Each structure stands twice: as structure tokens, then as C-alpha cells.
Image (cartoon, rainbow, N blue to C red; front, side):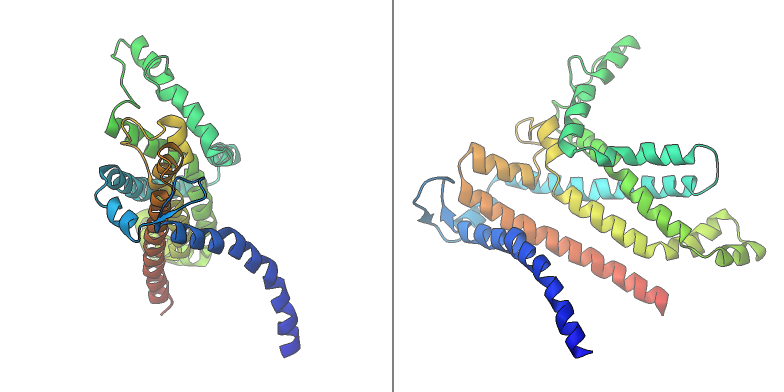
Length: 291
């Protein structure tokens, strides 16, 4: 038995190598570079200690990027859970065409975020945008969707939510279909209504699905990059930047590679802490249901 397990351990080597090459090494290198003042291409680096980390909290644009990152992460995740669960409950019933509706809802998730951003840009741009053309046809004034800070943030949240809500729907649909019919039938016989069935039977059994969906959407929202680049490029005046887009801005546009690395390390730690906290909360819920 022991020899068999030793042989199985060999199959972990490719995964370990990939993690070391594409996760551990870049993270360690970013942590190293964060202590230097470096433009990203010269052969010399100036050691500055923790100056880059101190500078972050005196940088108004960094604080705006942190605020936006939390909005994109938690805002998109909350909307995706509510809409995705509602869609899953609706599509769990039997009616003609539900397979087509599922495909249509899930289809945006199959498109690259960058391409989706460019497509939606032509809907929301101020001049010649589809939405403003519709408003003009209805005799209403044009809206500066992407030129004002909170309008643009709202549009980005909407686009990211719409693109990936299908993933939440599929996860919840699988969870709902995993609920035993015997529980539902027994509760129905006891006189439970639809809300009571959902609240006391379906929802508690969806905790594992909720955990998976929230974690996936939250991490995706916290590291949002491509949709922002395509739609606003961080504008207006860097007011829609996330951590990911602001790192690219500092590295390539400002040639502050060391500072960008410090932001990257901070972003990684923040996302890791949030993800671990969320997972811990869901594990406690799962244990309470099992006990």
C-alpha cells in the first residue's frame, strides 16, 4: 500500500513545477523588485527599502484603485449571486426552450473579457453609442456613460456582472438539481409553501454551490482588468482603475516597475486574505449544517 502511494506521488510533480514557474517565482520576483526603484528595463536598480509601500498610501490614485477594486469585486459578486440564483430557480422548471435560454445566458462567459469590453464600448460611448442613439430616438438627451466617474464604474460593474452571471447560474442549477426530491416532497406534504421550501431546504443545500460561486466571482472581480482597459482604460482621470490596471499604468506608462511590483504584492495579499476569510465563513456554515 505504501509503495503504491509513493508511485502516485510522482504525478504531482508536473503540477508542482507549473505552480513554481508561474505562481511562486513571479510572486517572489515581484516581492524582490518592490524594494527597488527601477524603470523596468535598465540594468541598474536603486534599493529603496519599503519606500514603495509607504508611497502607496500617499498616492490618491492608488487609494481610488483600491476602492474600485473592492467595488468591482464585491459589487459584481453580489449581483451575480442574486441574478444567477434567480435564473437557476427559473430554469430548473420544465418548459420548452429552457436549453436555449441557458445557452444564451452562459454564452457571454465564453467570450474574452477584452473583446466583450470593446463590444460594450460601442453600446455605451457618448457619440454614436447604441444606447444614446436609442435615447435620441425617444427624444431624450445623451448620457455620458463612460466620461463620468460613477457612471463609468456602474457600467463596468454591469458589464462584468452580465458577462459572468451565467457561470453562477450553472453552479446553482447543479446545486438545485442535487437536492433530493424526497426532502421537497416530504415538506410539501407537510404544507410548506414555495418560500419555505426555498428557505429551509433548497438554500441550506446550496451552501457548497454558494461557496464555489462566490469565491470564483469574487476573485475574478478583484483582479478585473480587461473590461476596464477596453472600455475606459482607467479613465476618466484614472478614476475607474482597478489594482490590475493601475499596476500596468505604473509599470508601462510611468516606468515605475518597483512601485508597480509593490502594488502587485499588496493586491495579492489583499485578495488572498479576502478569499481565505470568505472560504472560512462558508466552511463554518457547511460544518453547522452537517452537525
